[in-house]
Amino acid sequence: MIKLYNTLTKQKEILKTIEENKVRMYVCGPTVYNYIHIGNARPIIVFDVVRKYLEHSGYEVDFISNFTDVDDKIIKASNEEGISTSELTEKYITAFFKDYDALGCKRATKNPRVTEYMQEIINFIAKLVEEGYAYEANGDVYFRTRKKEDYGKLSKQSIDDLISGARIEVGEHKEDPLDFALWKKAKPGEVKWDSPFGEGRPGWHIECSVMAKETLGDTIDIHAGGQDLTFPHHENEIAQSECHNHAPFSNYWMHNAFINIDNVKMSKSLGNFRLVKDIIAEIDPMVLRLFMLTVHYRTPINYTLENIELAKTNYEKIKTSYQNLQFRLNNDMTEEKLDTEVVAAVTEELNKFEEYMQDDFNTANALSSWYKIVRISNSYTAKEAVNKETLELINAAFETYSSILGINVKEDNTLDSEHIESLIAEREEARKNRDFALADKIRDDLKEQGIILEDTKQGVRWKKI
Image (cartoon, rainbow, N blue to C red; front, side, top):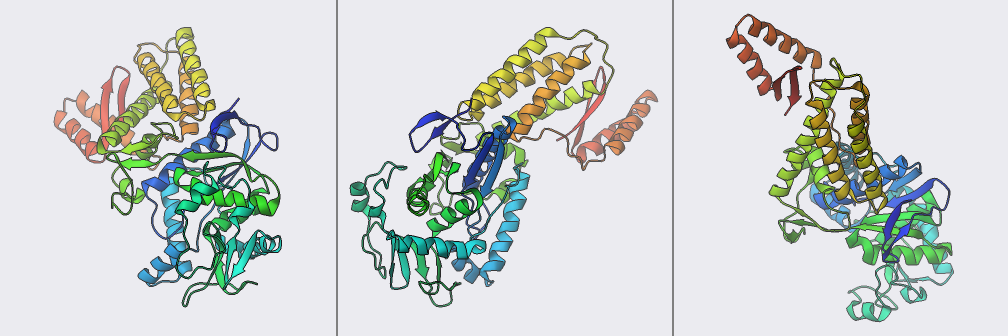
């Protein structure tokens, strides 16, 4: 029984899907005018884990995450780089997938792009105008916010509270300061599309409403994104979608908390944001992924060098433990009897893991549970005699944690294992012949390639550093 915190109701609720054993899930994706930063990476990783656990629990997940490929920022960046908006967005979508794959995320069922749904967006806006929920004003189209009686229900803000901070910008022809743009009149030199309202392009909020409807239907199970999207983006999505569809937009809303840099909120204005591509050029992407899962997704996370180093240490402990386990599985095992104490301990942790994940996807506790499995494995694999079935049970536990949390613990398959093993055999032969200079040279050469050797009672083990 999975419980998740619903921003709409401000409480944990049991997940009840529209269609049995199927989840319709929409996650707001990036505006592709630059490389993604670690603020973007948090929802990418968090909701990838949510999806993977849902699939582990037997759900078929229709996972949609969009690309906003037309926007003020895109137009500005394309002018600065001297390329078309389509060339710019293609460049950064390619870069996005490179980072996305490196972080161990499963590709979305579909990544719709705004430019692919332009006619659907225009039709959606036209219906809102026809039904009186929107109006044209000098080439722009605005949504009548006050027509949605429960506007503010997601962010828990009243119309009266909102009106105090609302204002009409220069050049806008709104009926009400709270009204927001569905269609923007084209400015000279901007990318544009023909519409019944004149040449222009869609506003930001309408895009996700249309893409969610077209890919998942009028009502979806889960809509997710960063906390900063709660208002106005998600609030406006609800308003326009429910007025257009005459149905609830999403039954559950999930939002991840902010990321801080050295205890200061990450902000472009402060210049303290870090690009994912730069970080994973310095550390294993799995370290960044593990770091992102060390606190509950609704809790702010603090990016510091100390916290990254701790994540790196913990990742190395998991990997080393897994490699030692593989080494024992692939070598002689003399114990025929199943170790019932180990079996009981592993089973207990797996049950706890399920409880943690079912309780609003608590990855912090889930990782703590994995660390206990690591200690169990280390203690058992260090024994002189081990049992194959017991080792396989531990191995299955590692596979469960790894697949759901998305943290790869397997060796890089690009390494030439046969070549490394042949060098180890050559080193062993040299040691037998007391040619310690050659043995040391082989060890040192491997170390320069990032391979370290460990001499154990069961033989020589190697691992990548």
